[in-house]
Length: 60
Image (cartoon, rainbow, N blue to C red):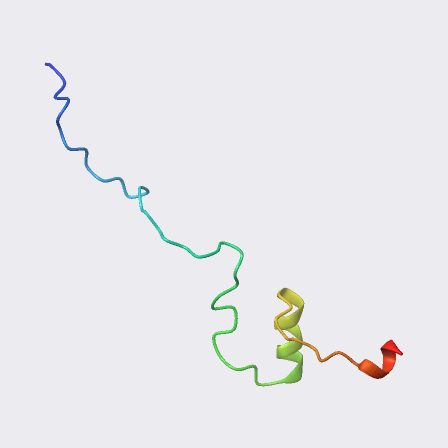
């Protein structure tokens, strides 16, 4: 049987065009607000997401 060069290929389950903005973002890391300080620290150990204020007095 001759191959049809104009045949439309069937999509593969793994052939998905995902438009991701970044593969390194931890979006969805915290599904809910941490209830305890220990839980917040555990999340911070996984991915540092809390911005700390700079202490200007220590720089002088």
